[in-house]
Image (cartoon, rainbow, N blue to C red; front, side, top):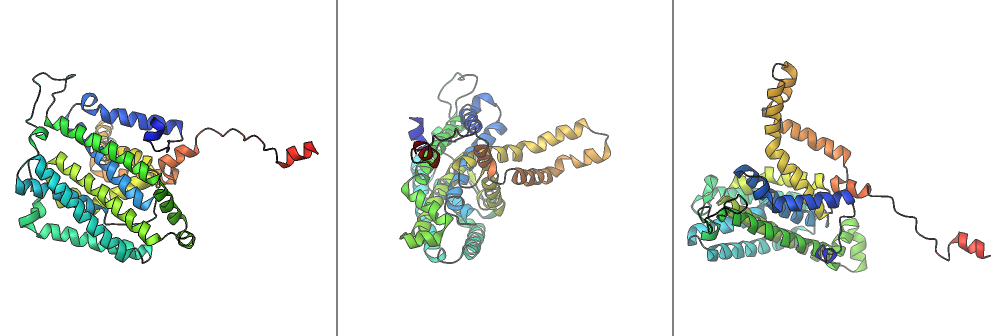
Length: 372
């Protein structure tokens, strides 16, 4: 059953399996295990980034395409829900219309980018996507009447997802059941289902062709596969999943702006998470997202505690100052790349137990010699 749910793509490592189970259970029970709005925000951001990074890994890790326009599709999903909800009013109909229009726009844009750009070399495709993403970000900032400009859009969720919605008078396991909690579990279910769908895609014959193109596109073309078509569909699918991730983030924040969805910093975060977790494995998106988002949100707090503990030691206190948390985050990234060149998931799979020796086949030289 579990093997089929994972599309026969098992973790292939005892430690990786344990880590994935802990992450799944931790995110499932996060509202009850980690009370407080910050912890719930971090858990929701991890869920959104798992889907966002996994969709980018379909493009980078499985197809070998470097794109800088992924945050553009992320932003299209967020702006679609935000604009529809602010123009049509709060309701499930507005969310559905906004998501459908965002998916349609992402489909057309990613299809056009793929058909017209994937025929060029990888570096030129990356530059084209960078230019398109920068143009879209500028457009979103300047169309203030439509997108809210630099201030972004604040909107209301449907009544069931509103923080003021409380269906039960008594708390459940010590936690008040409200619209915020329902929104979190809506995101959780959506991410689990879509992650399973991504696993199905990368382990299908279509996914095998993408990996063949990544390894050697000339050989794949010579065999008979139209590499441009497969690359274009990979670009389209990756964009659609990123669009849904953006819509989920908008529902959680009830706000959308250029800094939360379209900034280049988010694109760099996605690249870092893919490298840290491991390219070409969707489980790397899970492990990388957890480590990166937790470090991004709690490293500064840990450094503040450490700086207070060693207050009075001039050099050490300055080095561990909370204001330098980005410096240490960069150091941690360099160390992780140095020690895990294939990503954490790749390293864990390499460290799995030694394989048992395969029994010698009847036609092996040794056995053949004995028979003689």
